[in-house]
Image 1 (tube, rainbow, N blue to C red):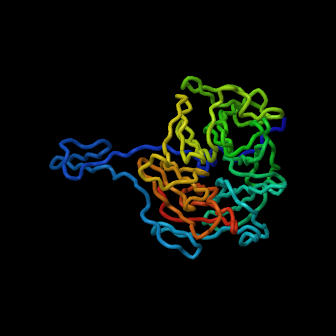
Image 2: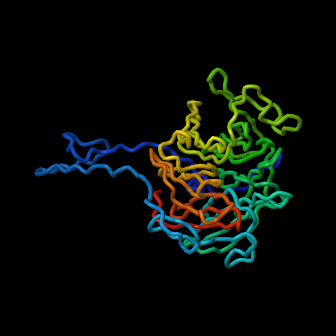
Image 3: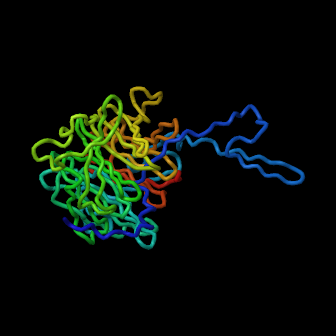
Length: 400
């Protein structure tokens, strides 16, 4: 088996935001008409010999306000946010000779020495024309390089960042593979067949690299767990599917991860099906993933082995999010979900809030892909996949 790729430092990688997960929590609301006799939870009380002052906790976060625009790049954004085009399919990335790939899809950001970062982006193109491109930025956001870090693959849809600083690019084709890529381009990409061969969509790892979770984009796709033989080394390990029997969830090994004769989702009788698994991200002991055919966002609690729906367009009082697809989050615990179609929005989920933060509705026949934050959380990257393929950066007072 091939050895694991050389990795970025763990300290740098833990600053990674693009592949982080999200914790959905409801903030406490204060009654503005009644002065409490005791300080509310989380309030700060300062006492001196003469006075006692109570400072209430901040109000719950409910988003960034109404979208305005469109701006010069055709985007609707909240007041105080600005955009720029980073790259356009078929054209050289500004300041470089690298031609940006067609059909940009899943992406993530990786910190670099000196305070810069790299944004990687899949190319969801078939006929052995897929792969991964990367744009490198200096600490002030200037583009300082661009390159291909994987080529000759097929239908590279989403993927996920690893805690050791590599990008896992997933082929969304029958018996598709996962490729481990070096964002710097210093090492050649390596196929990781131990993670199974199926219509991969996305992958998320826990912070230690001890366990990874994968989605499958099929109408009856499975939800997978991969446990490496050694944390951080994806050359070998055990691939399992989530099962359900009499309402009880469990995990069962996939007998043949290659799917050579039987698709991996059909090898275990009790496999729990999901309607079109899409993006996935990890946060605080849980993974959050989306399913497009029922417009849901799910939370799987790793320790408790429980599964809950945190958003359902069919039952939500604010069903503005449809066509759920790629997902990312900030360390503040906010999920950002990209729409495949819908209103061409990125939608914020936090507590009970469901609110769009970016809209590219002027672009017809496309989808929003690859949302990921820069390491400091001040810049959001994403792409419109088609007509033309274009990768954007939005800068503003993001809550991080």
